[in-house]
Length: 109
Length: 112
Image (cartoon, rainbow over all chains, first blue to last red):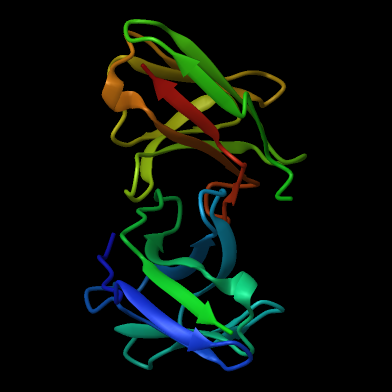
């Protein structure tokens, strides 16, 4: 599976959009981009995933660049409850998930 | 609430002992996964089962074993426990191996 690179930490003001970047320059054509988050020591929570098109659901939007070498997770209106570690994972179908270090997002009032 | 349940929530035991962690997947999910998260570290994939059969192995020690039963619940057995085995153990499930995984609340194991 391709490796991912994420900034170790980010800050965002409450009510503003949080844009979390992920670099996956070695991604191959059949690998999906997944985003999970982990609030404190709870079980990771699935957010969104995509292959090459942009995706949106009730939690977030996922923007994947045309060359698929990077992506951005967008939380449109961050709240204090969005403070968490966000993991970007690149995964082939049927392959296991590898969680890296993630980005620690701190949403400030 | 993801629908995945794990018991017990907390477990404290001594070195050299053996423990069993239990996971019940979401209704309808055939795949079960086990992960270990040590203090301030990322999640390490241990093992995956699909419909009762082992499907993939990760960084699982020989002292650890798992199985998935006909009713699809799974158990992770940890034996000859060492201090370094203290960690959060998460179970996740999915309908098919290609689908997104839903995680349980975890079992916190403390080995003294």
